[in-house]
Length: 269
Image (cartoon, rainbow, N blue to C red; front, side):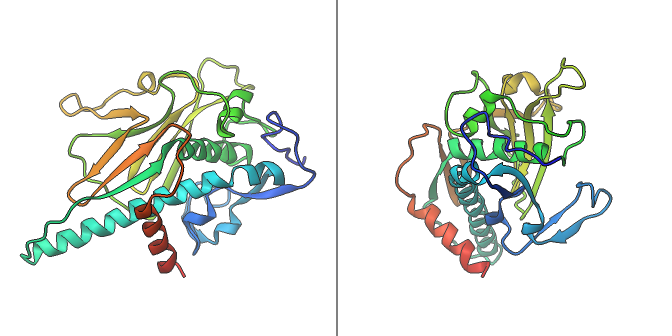
């Protein structure tokens, strides 16, 4: 049975379905190593990112969400550039070279990054790549509206970052992903609650109906992990700082974000 566009509850679909990338192509232009799909459950395989597509959105709705992929790329490039800045700093320190410079500041669109993460979650489920969901599954209309920038999620919901005080960030060209299911629902009517996602060393979590704090239990009482929803700022000592804008009204382009993106594009040519 041909899949239908999962955004059809939002507005009228175009006639043609698109090949939606399950993982944004902009993040892995040279290919991606994956594991856990039906065709590579027990081993990792490197494939071109165009191999990871599914017809789950029509052309019109796919086009309407293109800015979300751009926001995810900006975050990816910034985190990659910060890892390079910190590596350069460590090399200077190891060589005994005194080096002190002002932190590089970046401003990212958290609102679009959140919507991208939920879009990616829905794509994974709607494409049939997550077990426990029936064929033809579609997300609830409220989540669809949020992904398209309309409506709001309940208080305490949205995108969060799991952090431990003093935790080092292990930055890799890596994304990991899992789905959070809503509980207390009939087995034949599963619904997505949210996601867990590793994104270049950041541990992201998202919830669409329940406060993230209610879904998390710290494992170390002496230095408990915290899940901070709509985090305003992350300091990457000693080289950089990232501010997140959640207003949905961010305008203009941050010059340091642009430089990080240009640097990424040059390296991937």
